[in-house]
Each structure stands twice: as C-alpha cells, then as structure tokens.
Image (cartoon, rainbow, N blue to C red; front, side, top):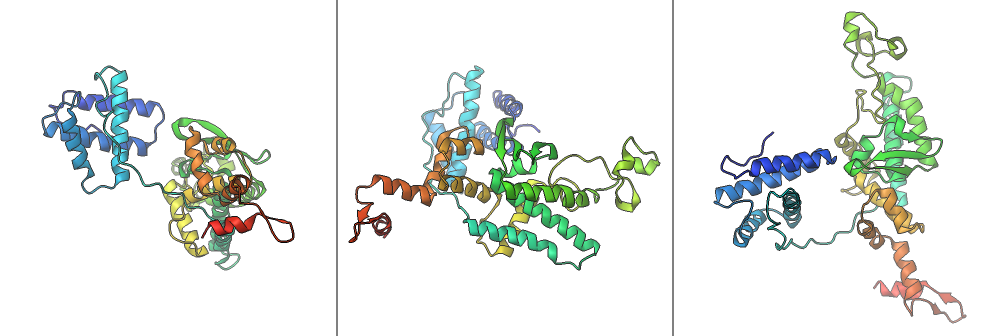
Length: 367
C-alpha cells in the first residue's frame, strides 16, 4: 500500500512510509497504522494540493488545514489526527528529514472529559447468568445442545477473564492456552507495543476457564474444517490423535492453541467478542454501550473500591502512565467517599448520642 500523496510531494510519501515502517517495527497495531496513514495521507495531500511544502509549512497554512480538518469532524477525531501528525514530525525531526516540528505551536482542541462507564457487581452477575443460560435452550442430548453448551462455557470464560484480569479486547482475543496458568491463577498478556505483563485470575475465572478448556473448547475445536492432508489419505504425524469427527469424517487440523474459538473451530476475533458481549448485554437487560472494555473499566474501579493501590492497578492494566489510571479514581464511589470522610472538616459529625455519623454530612453534600 502506498501513500496517497502525489509525485510532486517533495518526498512526503517516502517519509510517511518510513515513519509507518518504524511504527510497525515497534509493534503498533494494524488499527494504529491504518489511523495514522489516513491522517498523514490527508495532510500531505492537502498540502500538495494547496502548494505547500510539508517540510516547512507556514503557520497560516497549518491554520487553514486545521480549519478544513474541523469541517464535519468531531473534536476527538481532530485531536487524533493532530496527534498522528505530531508523532510523524517528531520522527522526521529525529531522522533529520525536517529542521523542526512545525506543529509544535499549533493548539490541540480541548476534549470534553468523559468518565468511563462502569458496571455494578450485580450487573456483572446478570451478564454471567445470561451467558450461562445460553447453553440451556436446545433439547438435552442433541448435537445442538452440545454446541450451545460449549459456546456458553466459552462466553462465561470470556466475561470472567475480561473482568478478572482487566484485559483489552485485543489482548483477550490473542490469548493462547499456553498463556494461562490456572494453577497459579495467572495469565501472560501481550499488550500495546508488544509489552508483556502478568495479570491475575480469581477463583471464578479459573473455574470458568477450566470448564471451558476441558469441556467446551474441544467441542469447538472438532468443528474446524479438515486439513488438506485428509484429501490425500496420508496422515501426518500425530494426526490419529487429532481425529475427532471433523467435517466429512476428515482429519481435524492441528490445534493453533488460540484460547477462545468460534463455532467453526477457528479463532474468535475481537469483532466476534464484541458481538457476543452485546448479545449477552441485551439478554441481561443492561443498557446500550456495555462492551468488553466496560468490563476492563469495571475491573479497575472495583479494585480501587476494594482499597487497591493505584500503582498496582496501573501495573495490572498495563498503563505506561499513572495519569491514565487516575481517571478511575473519579468513578470510584467508595474511594471518593473515603477521601471525603477523611479530609473534610465537617464530614464526620457527632449525632445527639455522641456517636460519629460519617454519612450525614456527605449525603447532604450530594444535593
């Protein structure tokens, strides 16, 4: 794929390709690369069409570009595009492709602060109940019932793992069987920038994963298409051990080791996980907007509610900056109440009997 800049772009296309290649080498996701390419192609194309050199655009040119960028786009999109351009110019400056970052003095549109949506513990229980009930619909003993039970075991394991370990959707979809240690209650996660971390699993998540791996996953794995070797009649080494009733009686392919499989026996991707979670949301009667990332937000907030240290939560989430994790202190009612009670001079008042009433003053403050 090549950049959308034209031949008269003074090397912009080559610089963009070098920058994207550097991001790719650092382990940036395909979504990041796609987003950055869109931003850079739009920027260099606009400059070329308006007769400006990307290496030293004037402030007036940049302001005109920002005006065109803001037309029909939200502030969040504009900010994301500008972040991509700033990152590009920082790279170009380090590589001595430009003398400096012309965007350094360009203001970024202020973003409205949005607190992440969080489920209550009762909501999560309802989500798990909805997942479990998905396996009880078909008549017992039928092939359909076997499949639905396997899918239900998988969905319960997905919800439990996402909530217990606070994983991103991409991290959840990329898990392998080998990354999970049920005995130690640990899961090895490859996060952004290919950075590895260890997250933890509680008893419910370990039990759900054990049931899925031992009872549900084999059912799904057997539904994979037969391997090409089955057409030749020659079995590769170990094929007899893998034969488990694949399509048309052929050989099941070697197991890829991906933890979560779909109904066809192949890897369940991030899009499929979002669809399944949304289906469970509807079945559980939860509001729109609940997603796998909502479980991650709930994980962090509930840890803080339980008294976990902010830096511990940061490490479990895989955040590089503590400032990113601090957003959860604003959605943790227990922590807010504890901080208020401990700090405000009128938060702890004595009632008529001389007992300390910690809630009366704080309740009034909410009005």
